[in-house]
Image 1 (cartoon, helix red, strand yellow):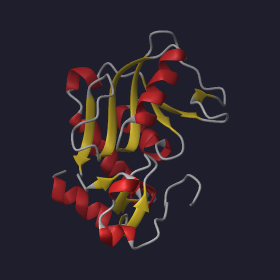
Image 2 (cartoon, one colour):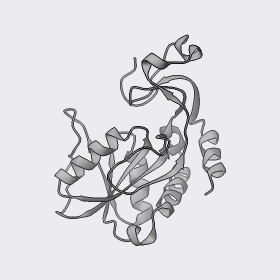
Image 3 (cartoon, rainbow, N blue to C red):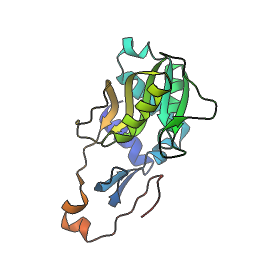
Length: 194
């Protein structure tokens, strides 16, 4: 898939929103990618996962034994990445504020893991998920995401393979441009609304 094909998938599913958004990173943006919308069509999710898997070099892809993603946003793409790679997929979640494996999910010590997200902006949740995977005995050998919003600046401590990089500007609360400052921010993701 080429970048235009990928963006067509986001547009076709009405997953690219415009307005004033508060991102989970705490930053503001005039654009928001609602990956849940692009992933709600199972065939589209499968195509995007297969394209993401192809971004990972073959020798690294062949080493992956499990896929782990952070709940909630990463669950669907993590599952589809597991399918694309022919390995089991599981997720970490934050029942008490810190990511952990639950629901009977477990990793064998040293098991080679691909950590998969839907969108990476600052990389904070990805790094937290990687830490939880390592604490559970897994060895994270790479990370992948549908979208890298970090402008290429994110460092996850492992090789990172996004399907597409979309570099919409983001702003700290004290540096909003006038057109955003004049409107109320909404938080359309899975975390609590404003």
